Image (cartoon, rainbow, N blue to C red; front, side, top):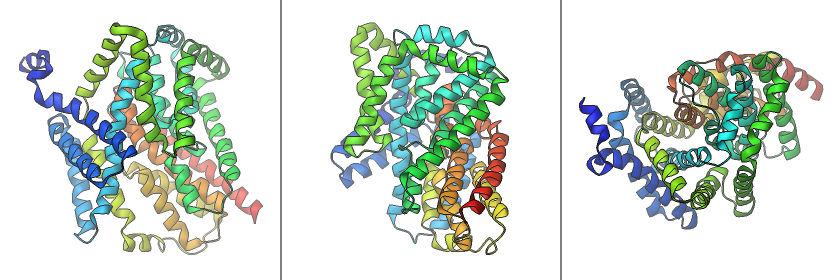
Length: 451
């Protein structure tokens, strides 16, 4: 009863909830200011705001997440040992700060898309599909949007789906969305994964990475659509196109603006989204008048008030990942774990299994990619660079799809109102295992052909 009364109180009488809403918005303001004026002082202000957000949202964090975050922090402290510069910790905090601001933007994008004039028609068309066809539509549309918008695709697709009271079906939809978004890592030019590949393999031509990555991604998505749709995939694809038609113009405009900003400003995809998408939201609110402005704002703030549960674990995980990246002795040990020059199928199988296994253990994608490269160092020259690059992208995809330190997991859990723990261990685990087996077969054949 007390909780109910508290919830009915205005925000002015609930300072902690007000802070949970205000701090991500302040992080967004600081984030935009830092893009224009990258001053170290602003960086430290953003770290302080993040710390304040973790403190005020702590009462909303589940006990299991508190325990998990505590374990991660203990491991991080032991590895750090007081011997590393603050810059190592700051690198992890930077990721968490940007994500907190990004999440606030996504809540406004989601509310804005829900309020678009054509959104009702789109929801009606999605509602007309059966459950299997709808999940195929979610996977395909999330994949195509994620090639440009990355994890912002969740905020576009979720509002177009009809309300779903069944938690099990929401989980299936979230799993399908994750499958679509995360496989875009293979060939999207706007992801950190592709940037990591070009940094690690500077001699690889871009056409080779994007060309083979696109073929791999389309093969994975096509196989997923056929297996999920059970013969109804072609009809589901046509229905997806029809469902997006009522809102296509504003989405193309917003997406084009993000692409243009990335192309001409030098900003990352995440930074461009943080800058451009609020302008899209503002334009749509002004265009829709007071009623749409009120609806978008109230929906976004209401959802932000429920946030914070997973940020504690995520922040701890990305800081641990940053510390591990600077742990030279750990990386040296990894380089000698595998015996030198094992059979090619064994090497590819082990590296693929490591990518999936580390993701399930909660390591973030950057750390998974670094570990795969470190393990392969002991067998240098056994795999062509493009093959090793595709294994790294597989590991990156796997970690993004199943790790609790993944941005995609956190956002899909919030967007579909599903416990993130139920998204880490899901149908995507056997799905990724099958893709890993495909890695062994196809990439082994490619390795022998390229020798």
